[in-house]
Length: 148
Image 1: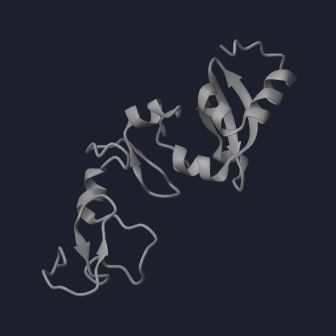
Image 2: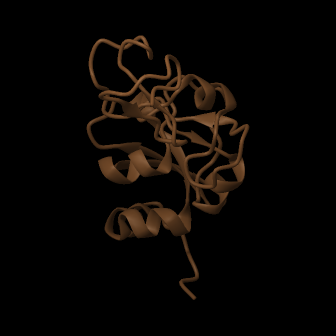
Image 3: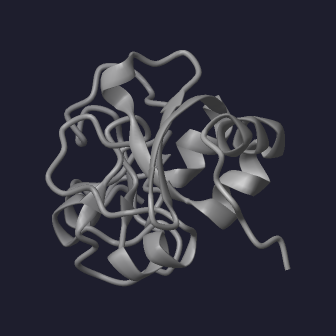
C-alpha cells in the first residue's frame, strides 16, 4: 500500500527502505530510474552500509555514503562539492587521466566528464581501475613504488 494515502495500486518503491508510493503521492510525473522516499532522503541512509546520517551524496546517482564506507573503498569525502561522484559511478565511467600525486592519493579525471569532475583516489584503488594508466603516470613522473 502507498505510504502517503494508504491505497493499493501501482507503486514505486524506495531504494533505501520497503516503503511504496504512488507517483502522484510522491509528487512525481514519471517513474524515476532510482527513487528515494521523503523519509530516507531526509535521514540520508548510506547506500552501502545502511547507516543513518551519511555525510556524502553523489550528484550523479543521488545515493548517500558514509565517510567510513568511502575511506574503506579508497575515496576521499565529498567536502561539500556539488560535482562530487561516488566510487560506484567513477568505476562505471572509468579513468580518463591522472593529473597529480600527493602521497598515496592521485587526482584523477573520469571518462565522459569535464576536467572539473576530478577526484582523489588512493593508489591501491587506482591500480584496480587502470593499472596501465597508473604505471605510465608513475614512469613518466619517475615515481618509485614498492609493489610488494
